[in-house]
Image 1 (cartoon, rainbow, N blue to C red):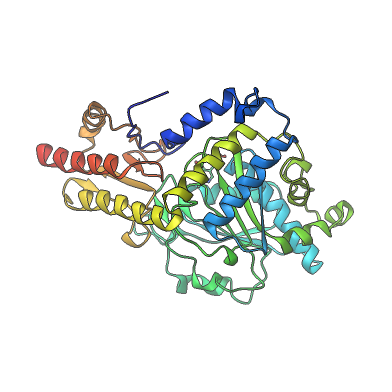
Image 2: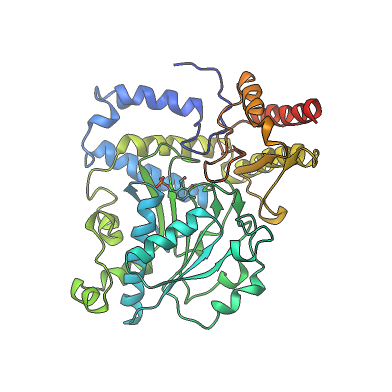
Length: 394
Ligand code: PLP
């Protein structure tokens, strides 16, 4: 079960720690010497319940999740989150206030745009607070407008929730902190998609109503999504009857994504992919052993600084479309000033075993995704290649 350490910069599913995969492979055949593999046991057995409880405990430790918040897992990915957030959170607002209000979306790239479109498609009242393309100098995703330009659209207005994507995986745009107008706001539920930057840096979970993250970048295999939710939101959802939803024209949430039902059944209302969750828990344990999120954050800062400085050192050769104040520490997006060299760049990188660098089909160019599991050494190798390639081909 050995392999040469990969240097795979793909945007996801992403490379995972080899040690984790080796343990998972063993557990797939014979879990804890019980003579059955982890994927062959009932999701309600004591072994499976322990995996669920351990994963929750370890995530709580890693993210300092306060008692005010619950953790649960649902089959599916970020896209399942787009719809489940819209219906559950609008229901919660109805339960809390007896009325409905629009959801507000801060759009900074294609994933927050998709989340907004899904809410609209489901007839959840929703509004775009801003679309960063509208104020961008190039009319593209690559910037986040200053808070002073949009905070008035939030302050003093009623919203069922305010949604944003903390790291836009395709465009390489990351919020480096929670906007001030969303901090310490008792009457605004902040909802964030952390699919591509969860556990990459420290955040204050108490500020969020809901955090949602698909597993397949920083925390595991595709197939499961993590949710961290304020208990009061669960309570407010539970208060609303189907008749009331009908009366207000709000869609009823399908049972498989109805948050209070999932939490009441400790994430095993239906068959949870327990192998996938076990891999996630192994990733959590690995991170705890490494020194937790602060240690990982230091590594991520080092990795992203190395790559951006290599690219910035050749401004006539590389183009970085994202403003410095919102450059992603997970997905480094760049293009060559001379696109005729694109295939040569990929071929030479691949000859050095640096893979997965092609940009998203909607953006083109290149994207180096440097998630938690990618080593500093792999990133240093890429930085060196970036500099060498520019020097040879300028
Ligand atoms: N949100 C973000 C930030 C993503 O990067 C992705 C996928 O890459 C998604 C949501 C959608 O996730 P999924 O493909 O698991 O539905």
